[in-house]
Length: 473
Image (cartoon, rainbow, N blue to C red; front, side, top):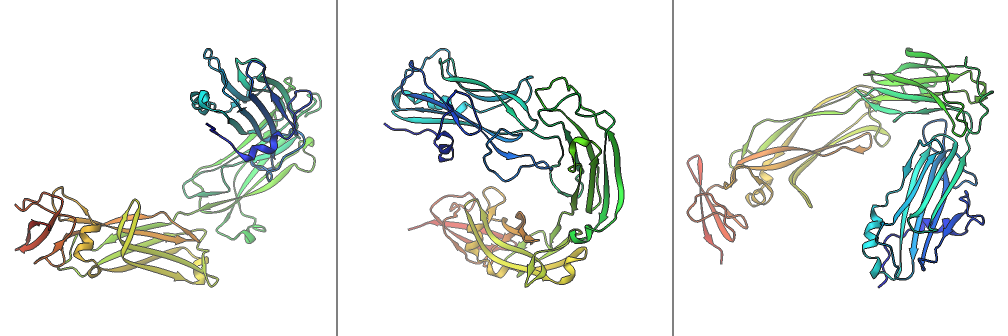
């Protein structure tokens, strides 16, 4: 029986060659075998696939011919071609991990799925298993690598590799766009790079400073020349600790944090007089603090009787301040809002009544959006059979009242928002004199209990409804 547990063509190109001296390099892999386990092959490879940019992120993905600080992939691949005799004790543990030579920055692959492979190993003629670390090396330096299978002879490879980096000023931030009520947060990192000379890396008097300016509710083009109002600034004396640990890069940081910023654009200016940075000693970074679309909805009544009410009135209020509306119809800023009333359950969506609001005008791109609207929802489109099929019973054992889902959503700035639901309560059917309803039935004694395979008849008795049933033929 042939069984492939995990196999990915993504990794095939990593094993086209093996290091002649058994060392992990940036362009080859290590292949390991042991005479005690014929048919078992263990291979590993390490690649730099993305470099740090001046901001917290990576360049476009590619493979580099040297190890550089950035995004790294460490791969462990196990393959077997015949039934293997695996020792029961101790349990073999596949490992794929890295840490700096001082014990920090530990990260490792997940071997939990390997144990699932072991359960089927005796019944497997050919199979494979992979473990992949895809994680960042934030600091250049010398790192210890351990990759292979523990407790199984020559199938474990240990090595050290060095990741190069340059002295740098880099910025970390969660996002350039944040929502109202969320703080602006950023950290500027000054990095020694690797390798470095502790005697010449810096004098100890270097400064790093930042200034955060509020530019207002303006466009990106306007922000390029706007002066703005300074709302936060700091000057920081650069300090690197543990420079005697020369096998790892070191860094200092400057933290920017503003609680409850007002809506609009912000420009962050960061620069340092540290000569190791050369011309790359500062930059500007733009933040946007955006509003959140607020929609309030209300129905004109708490419940509706289909024999009396012909429509429901839905009142809506929309409010949004900045950055205004950018989605378009024929190059005009446009806002859309939709509703439908019907069946909305997992696996099904059957709108019975639906309508939409479309607003399109040049002023939507420059002004605070505040608008009220009313939808008149025709209830006459809802038949009694549709109501029974689509509505949810509110009181156990009773046909009425029933709840239908009114689904609301907006298309705002070109993106559809998450659906919200508003219940419409129906207290009675359209034709209370005689209504036949399939599939939802009651007992013939009209006590309101549901019984399958019956036919319902609902008759109005004053303000109440009498329900009787007969067995279907």
